[in-house]
Length: 112
Length: 119
Image 1: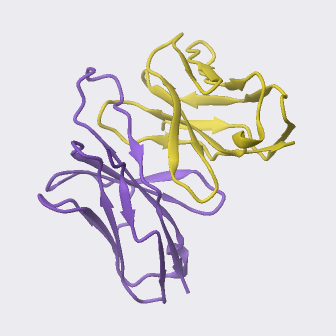
Image 2: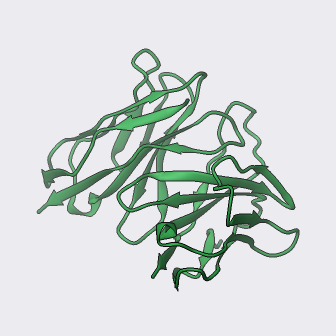
């Protein structure tokens, strides 16, 4: 079945470091891809999304490019801040009215 | 413009009791999804509802769990005779019917969740 695999955490970085969180997917068709972020004690917020191959989603300095050839959607940020500490979920959905399939999440700690 | 609202935010139940979780979707949204997040896990889909209809309940446990989204009022996720393994965070998401075409997922907006603890 359709699934998402993302790198396990926790990931600990110093402030201003470069961030990459890897995400790959398995799907029978052409899914939409998402990154959600969950701050402590809160619900999920959509961080960015891409709906077709080669699309780049971006928001708050984060970017991810939909790579069909490698079935990947890696999350990157050039310079992380302490406030970026959270759990990041990679996810996919196949059709418009459909459930989202989530990865297990990657916990990110940014040290000052 | 209020977002997705869920209540209660925290719920404590003893084994065997019933838990009722409420979700009010964003204004203008008629699609509701329920997800469960176990500790240190990602979210798992449970059920997808439109007004007065269950569209997909493939993620719902076959016993003790039920969901509804009436014509008026919030969506309700009901867990009967709770057990310790039901302890989790339950998130509701909503979306609009969608205008961007069949292939593209309409953005689901998530509520803050209800954290259920079964003693």
